[in-house]
Image (tube, rainbow, N blue to C red; front, side):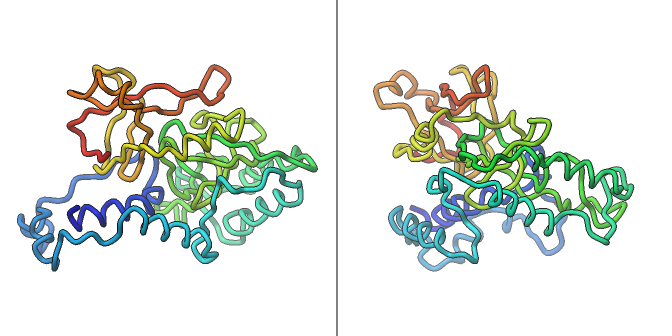
Length: 304
């Protein structure tokens, strides 16, 4: 395996959720960047500068060991979602919400919304009410689900921005990250209007749109999918996943590092010439977890 390709897979598998807003696209590089030649824009320019570029840095087993070790490091704040405990008390969930509020909620510092106006006292009061803390039971069973399309992970259940200045659109303090389709979630709680879910991902907790999550009836449904041993990995920046074998209607866009279980070789045999057939999570009529077939062109940048 090419060394650069190996590094790409390693970085993608660890860091892909930390990219920007779910609805954003990356602008093309400027053709006139200072000190950047055309040669520098080609991978081969950098590959030739690496000593022994085809050396494999880590095989699958080594990457797995590293991931397991990282999950045990408290300084990385990772969470092994599948190992989260089944029952949570009201006090425990209140502590999580309180920690979020103390870190990102109302302070003496003025914050500004997307319209450039200061976030008002009324806004903060309404936001705190949306957390729905009064509805927390004394004991709550953790739910599990899978993300069905790329979605934002927000600090609070709101689309409003929290900016440092009236014209500062560079950094929204309410935006944690984004989550890729197929990602496993532990679900703690729901907002007062029931449109947001308070979730735990493997790298961060926060709020996501409920419509972007399919709820598993049993924990094993979600975990079985997340533990697939025959995945197709996205190695390109973005790859469309389609709902039809003619590749006409995209279900969602998957980004580098995302992976999806392949159907069995017997089920794949009809598609060997043009596309891969995947199993992808979807929402049923009541928001429950169901699985459907998805399709990716074999010409796309993917790796079996």
